[in-house]
Length: 251
Image 1 (cartoon, helix red, strand yellow):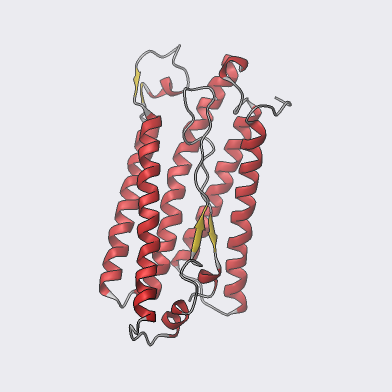
Image 2 (cartoon, one colour):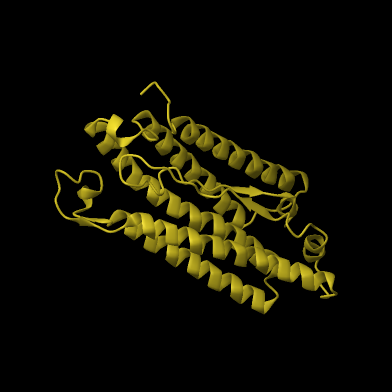
C-alpha cells in the first residue's frame, strides 16, 4: 500500500528512528573502546547480536506497514490481514529475543566491573536468570498462542482457541519495567556506596564512581498499535540500548 495514512507514518518513522539511534549509539560505544584501546567483552558481543536482532524487527515492521499495519482492519483485505498476522509471529519472537540480548549485555557489563563484589555478582546472576526465563516463556506463548498454531494468522480457516496475548504482553511490559528499575538500581547502589567511601581500588571501579549515576543506559520504551487483530502488542515493539557516556569508557 502506497498511502501511508492513519498510524502508518507513526509506525514507519518510529521504527526507522529507533533503529538508527540504536546503531548510532552502539557505534559510538565501539569507537570509544577503540580510541581508548579497551578490550572487548561478552557484553559487546551481546549488544551486537541485539542490533542485528533490531534489524530483523525493523524489516518485519516495515513489511507489515506495506501490507496495511496501522490502518483500520476494515480497510485491509483478508489476504493482507493474514500476511500481517504471519509476519507478526516472528516479530513477537524477535522482540522477546531482544529483551534477552539487551538486558544480559547490561548485566554482563555489571559483572565485568563488579565481579569481585559477591552480592552484586549474585544479583546479576539472579536478574539474568529471571530475564532469560521470562523471555523464553514469552517466546513459547507467542508461538503457541493459538491451537492450532495457524489460527494465529487465520481465525476463519482454522477453528480452535487462542490465549489473550495482549494481556500477556501488558504483564510482560510491567515486569520489564520493574526489572529495568532493579538493574539501574543495582548500579546506583554500587556507585552510591563507592562515593560514600566503598574503598574501590580497581581503575575501572573508580572510573564508574566518577560517572553520572544516570549515564549508564537509556532504553526506548516499547510501544504498540492496533490493526488486523484486536491488538498487535509486539508488532512494532523495538528495544535498542542507547549506551550513554557512563558505559563508553568501561573495560
